[in-house]
Length: 447
Image 1 (cartoon, one colour):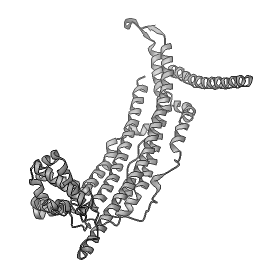
Image 2: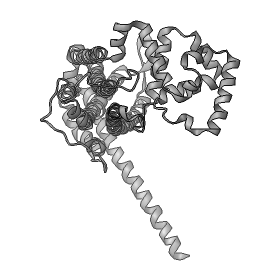
Image 3: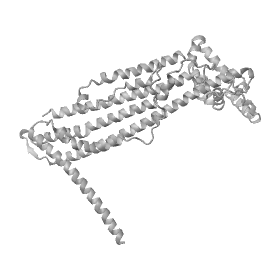
Image 4: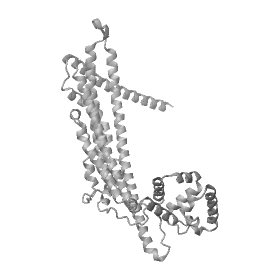
């Protein structure tokens, strides 16, 4: 029991010592700030050497957050694919991402910056690239090509033809017949088909259009959906068919008519190619997500650090302001001594400027640069792939099947989105730095 008491006393003594040490440390810092108020009050003007005098405190308080942000994570998923500087295509993502302008973190420079001139050209360039990507996709769209040649009627006929390949829909007389049924007839047909399927599973063999199959099941089982579909415009019906085709990709089976084997295998390989691109996009998204999570985590840490510094400064300011005496101001009555209030306000502006705002913007800029580098790694595999990709090479005769061009465009669009985010964040950081500078100039020049 005695040993436990002695141990408890030792722990409490250590805690008391640590708290006293921290209090003495803060008191020492606050004493330096008090001296700064006195100097500013005496000199009647801002001291150019203020930043130098505050430098030890600035470096001491910024050391922790700098170490945290610069720490290398245990895992770096964005580096799963090594960057290849030798592959360049018509669309070259890595140099374009490298062009993203970095934040201007030096407050005095940001204060003189024409921010729109600095960042808008790049943002406009990304927007232009996105527009060109859309035009390229539209140019090679097989659905658009069919529409140009055969019109809306041609698209509907092709959609019906693809749907009618479903064994289930064939048993019901085709999609067109299904759409003409009344609700009662559709329910009866659905029940009959369900019974037939239970007794003869072979009815679904050879069904090599899951999209059409899924759509037919939806119409048979969901009366409200079937009614909505009937009321849709031609454009809406086309979009609905395309949606089901995209959500239910083909899974071709080569065990059909041997005469069709080559054609079916060709289509199956095309489907596999599209699936491979989809998986590539998934890898890119996962890598970008990991890089973005680290970036966001660091931003949160920086903001928390900034809040803790701000609280210390404001705590000191509140104590000093409360101690300013009330003086006679003639016809203006009584108020806090204006000379002391002004000296305190200028000191507060200097403390925020040198101890908080300047290091805050620099560490945010450092974090942004790390994020940009990580994003380049994350999209490296996609950039290598598109270097040799041939647009419009999708060979599937089913124009409603998943399209390789669409998947590639989706991946490139994701990369463009990250580039836009990088430039927007850099612009916002610079805008904040400019605001800090203007605020500092306004307060310190008022004397």
